[in-house]
Image (cartoon, rainbow, N blue to C red):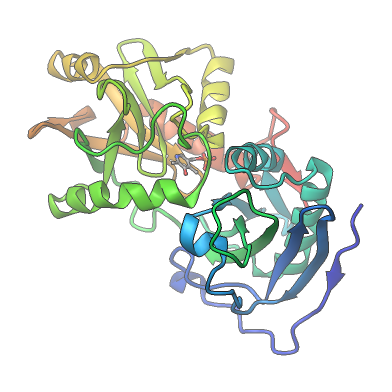
Amino acid sequence: MWNIQIVKTNAPKAKPDSSALGFGKIFTDHMFMMEYEAGRGWINQRIVPFANLSLHPASTVLHYGSEIFEGLKAYRRADGKVQLFRPMENIRRMNNSAERLCLPQIPEDEALNILTTFVRTEQDWTPSAPGTSLYLRPFMFGNDESLGVHTVHHVEFLIIASPVGSYYKEGINPVKIMIEDEDVRAVRGGTGYAKCGGNYAASNRAGERAEQKGYSQVLWLDGVHRKYIEEVGAMNVMFKIGDEIVTPKLTGSILPGITRKSCIEILKKEGYTVHERLLSVEELSAAMENGTLEEAWGCGTAAVVSPIGELCYKDRKYTVNGGKIGKITQHLYDTLTGIQWGKTEDTFGWTYPI
Ligand SMILES: *Cc1c(COP(=O)(O)O)cnc(C)c1O
């Protein structure tokens, strides 16, 4: 294992009140850092006091968007212990994202050791109020000090952590989603399956337009046919149409969510009919018109599951399940949060105590 040097802060911050958390605004006392140099590999593994970075103005990431990230949480269980949820999935996905962006991969066992060592150092920052957690943000960026366009030779990898509040402080309220038929998020052959900052930069315009019309996020269609449902903002999407649960299959332009994968595994284990397949917006509209669309929800680490109460397509508005959370959506929420916070038995072996 790599040696991780730990330099503790001599000015620890006061822990925030759990009612004041929000998302990603408060950061813990330390951060993990290491560098990569072509020919030398990953070097200088260290946990240091949280501080600003200093970058050369020609740093690759500032000009050519060479950046990937991950998002996962540490959860405080009732017995006081802290646990992660399927961390190896995040590590593997990060390496797949790195491969797509020509950034270096991190050996899986080293990445897991870094993550757990860092969480152990910061574990006192894991809040315990219901629905709260410690959000972990590993990220990597190209950092050559030159404007030439080429595969980078210098890379930074960091992990920062932020105690986050409950996503559902005012109860689980279904969201209104607009189906976007102009901008696209990703195309096959592009970076849709990679968790990279550039995907977000390019999707902000549609998100802003949807917000102006009173919608919280957009539902993306595929970039080739402008026809098949892909995913919502930062979440994957699932529908209950009649007796079938449908989620878009991973064609390369969709982010392979770990919450999506977990929902599929839970539902299949319980005997539901779940299909990962192409779902056209026409099929979805028909199901909304004839009343067979019973439930719709987004799924991702931040919100766990997020019921969709209204869908808008080409200025036509459809209410889903009377604008209320559906039975399966609620069941998935209860099951996943039960496992994550250690309230129900983890029969899948998904949790990873620190
Ligand atoms: C991170 C992310 C998701 C959800 O992935 P999880 O692993 O479930 O958190 C879905 N879509 C996009 C675009 C994402 O960036």
